[in-house]
Length: 161
Image (cartoon, rainbow, N blue to C red; front, side, top):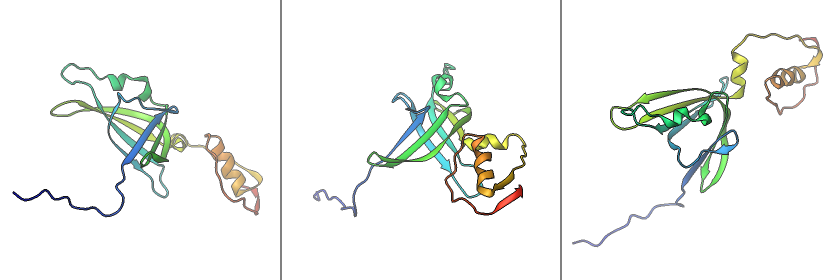
């Protein structure tokens, strides 16, 4: 019988870690996160999907979907990294949830999250800014949704914008 052989790996062995916070608190260990996906691209509002194992379809019992943590409007932050050195990769609010029943086993709760700016797309608004710069107008518009902008100030003053 041949001797056991271990294939050496290159580089350091890292463990990927993540933390999901709702309203500033990390999810309890009783919440079983199956997967999460975060989407960010230029010209699009970021969003995330969090899938959580939930309940027993046969008993019609879905404790996570009934949990107040996943109520629409709650703030969500997803942090990810290696060896507990995590950085924030998404901040937003819960906008909905849905339950899928798998053929075998437990249900799957999908929590849908959007960046806070998503609220700005729900209604049409227009504003006029007098004697101000582009950066002033953008900061004021985003500020009405609780979003701060860090950008260089522009020098050109517009009579009407």
